[in-house]
Image (cartoon, rainbow, N blue to C red; front, side):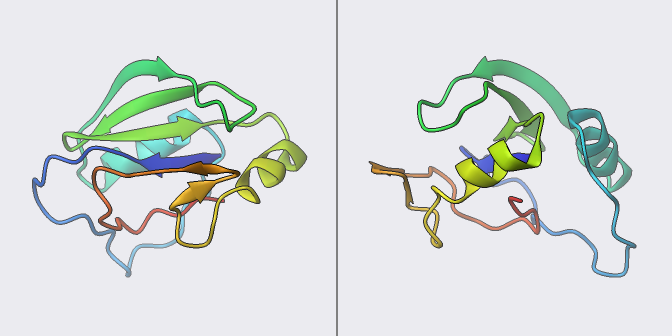
Length: 110
């Protein structure tokens, strides 16, 4: 699974309590459940295509901010796409990316 944060609403802090045990997330349903268990409001939005990823994505609106979710059928495909992302997240392959909201939320791609 690969997550990409997009436009934010600026509403509230974006943190995940560190005292919570790690939850294995292997599907969109797992992610939604984990976010909701932490008190987040999660609403499915539109499907999305990004030319630099092998799979179609889904936009989830989390506490008013759009999060792009890309769910892969196998680890090799996810790893291949993840390796295209620069360490600072400003480019994917040869595409420069300008994120509207660059706040970190405790969520990681991987």
